[in-house]
Image (cartoon, rainbow, N blue to C red; front, side):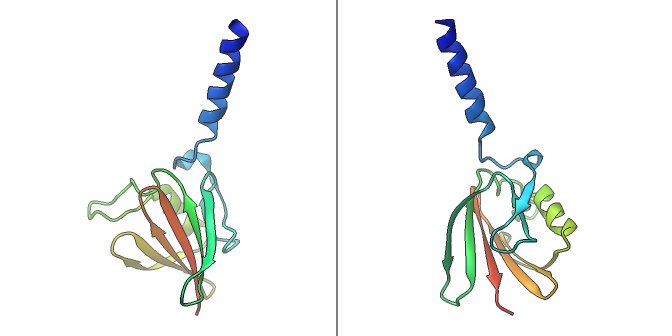
Length: 125
């Protein structure tokens, strides 16, 4: 009986460690869309496709990525934006409080944030 409870406890600990909820302590990884643009390490890729303007985008699922907001109501996960800046990307424009264009070395990435997912779009220059 004790072994059964020990196995259940181990399973619960493993499941808790595999969460895809946004936490800055999880760290960051490079996106597949743009190798030097960071994404939270525990974000799950959902799909890659082409939009009608032929720009390629990548959707990621990450619970709570859009919970942190500014006083103006803009979605703004501070640690994530800090990491983007550390990688040399500068914020060029923002749209409706949830979309942002970042630029680096003549490359542009559009980041659109929602409560539990985000999308990266590589823009054509």
